[in-house]
Image (cartoon, rainbow, N blue to C red; front, side):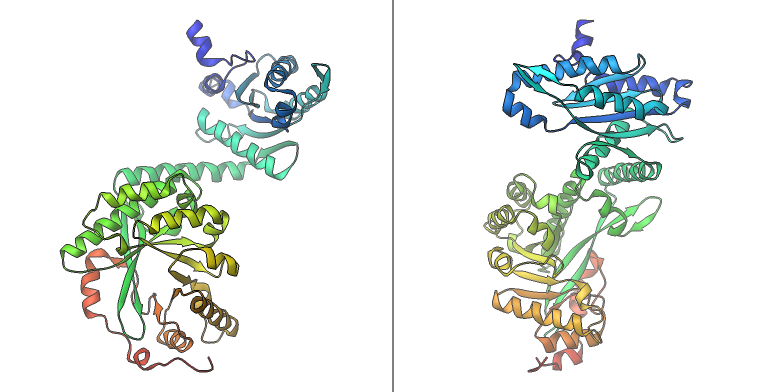
Length: 445
């Protein structure tokens, strides 16, 4: 009994802890009679609790948590379950969701009544996220608690105090994303992902500058899936880092295989924002590179989104500098979409600016895109960066780029992304278009 108490209750308040309320939710879901009714799971976070802790001290703040917990226990029905899930965070299971609003209002009013702590009167407010369940879908306790927590965090961004409900449509989207995340995790473990490679070339000379590694998913039921199907789901998720490391390892493995065939190719790999900004990115990259001692790190180029580096410039600059010491190079991808300042470009140690395909598309008859391209190419010269245009789909687009002074590009006009085994043959047969070989930089572009 003592061990169970330690495992499922909070020592400070005597309430259930996170493990305890998870168990209570599971018991509720297992009761077929009760589970036919609508229940509510509420995730609660006290407002400005850190300020109170700083002002009155940790001991007084702990006493407030204990006093508040006892008040709240008196304000909820006997069949409800209140838990302290950590710090100043609580969770509340209400078996009857029809009274959720009145119960939350009662908790709010109770918390607003002053508490006397060391001669000082204080009161508490809170923000909450509410999930109603079940709604016909298969539920599990951990998922419900995560949904409530996520709704709470959203509420804290959208309102100073109060509560926010997760509606049925949002719950459906959440569950779909969770299922997709699990499928992606399974796919990684089952080695279902593939790398395709799109060449980057000098339009005028035909020199192959390298290839960009682009991930695809060979799904056992859905077939070959493009990155747009699964990458948005893992954005800001730790799976994004796992996928990124998979791409890095397999790109280096492919460089090694090509060199064994006598083909020397540089490979560019896209690095997500949360991957670049993760703890000790350079250290993890060092370990990955060390697994391929025969591959010169200069063969690896890391492409980072302009908007990703803008998030924390100082950290990005340091991380990139640390990685450059290993021998790898960097490119700024989708350039022009993140509104970089000139000082930003000056500080960021990247070798290449990649112009987003959005500005290349339609340059034949879009004067605005043409002007943007001129500006980007001019900036690249000022800062000593190579510029690569993405999304070149026609010979005419290539001619315009060359006339502006942009010689390097990738796109379907040269080659779509292709399998690794096809790259050596493509390099052997690739010749630039005669029109491009003859195009000269215009004096008045």
